[in-house]
Length: 104
Image 1 (tube, helix red, strand yellow):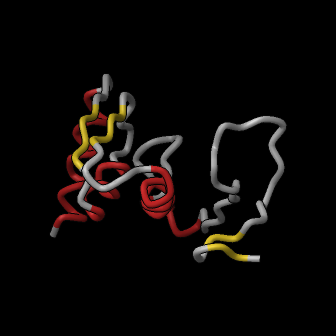
Image 2: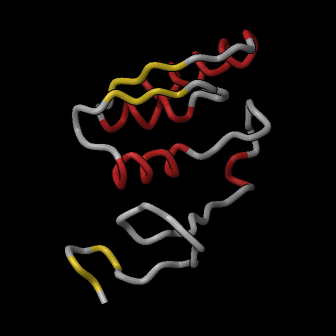
């Protein structure tokens, strides 16, 4: 069953949540992301989905652990302002390179 294009059924069950949207399992190809620059790098598509589901246009996004920078790419693609921090200088520099690649 769907309401406003969103399924009323979740892909998983949670014991407790304050979310007003159904949970969803996000599938993606690990092989596609062989050029990871961070050990826990998430795909841009995951961050885009999260932003579309839970952020409103005009929101400012805060990421205190930038890592690979894929959230910055997602914010850039969707028009969100992002404030981000990364303590590891090598990850920070690599994330800037990734953001630059996606920008062009």
